[in-house]
Image 1 (cartoon, one colour):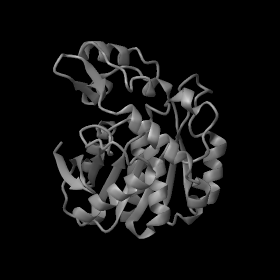
Image 2 (cartoon, one colour):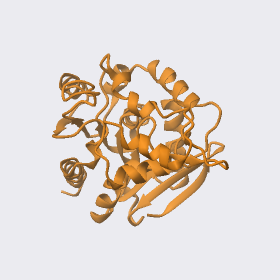
Image 3 (cartoon, rainbow, N blue to C red):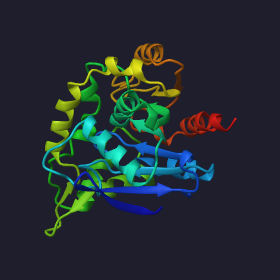
Image 4 (cartoon, rainbow, N blue to C red):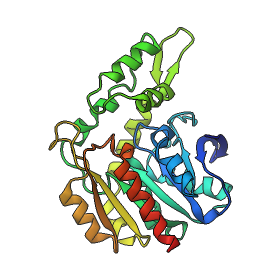
Length: 283
């Protein structure tokens, strides 16, 4: 998969692509979650490319190989970066698939800049978050700010994380996230302070004021299982998905069986629903 870097809004933004850029209207922007990176999309990206889509997956500022400024984190900053990236690539409008934080970025962009977004997929986010949300994502936040004695130690700790079943996808995902220092120690590439600022800024945004403004056809996908137990640590509950569906005109909800907040994008059912939703524009 080709990798690229562009200077956007004074920072270097890194992104990966799949497919051929032949028709701008067949471009899909893939936007990852809170502490994730473009590596989240290494299964969906190739699947999109195989169906003639051009997929672009950026590392948001402060994540992956993108630059990490000391401040400037929150949904409006990311929307600005993504629109600037689209401007630089001469993309007047894109299809948008966002997971978790990426979903929140998506509905902000869709509400404030409706002409820039053709179709929207919200992946396991978009509603009011349950009280146990921070506990539900604690396993991914735990690594931030920690210093590990070696890459092996970091990978081993991640391997023991109960939120996913370890496989080559997660191995590559966390190796990409690992910053190896000159003395051999390892930290996550995601600065803890960036995420703390991000969470505080995003808590001040009123999603319910934005959702009614979304005009793009919208698919809401939700994981059937929680991260703490099958029925605990669910980020987008069935009730909230139904409520959001009632607010966004013409939207629909699909539950992805056997997945939680972190494994949903690896599901074949998820991929087939995405491809069917996007292919509807060809009919």
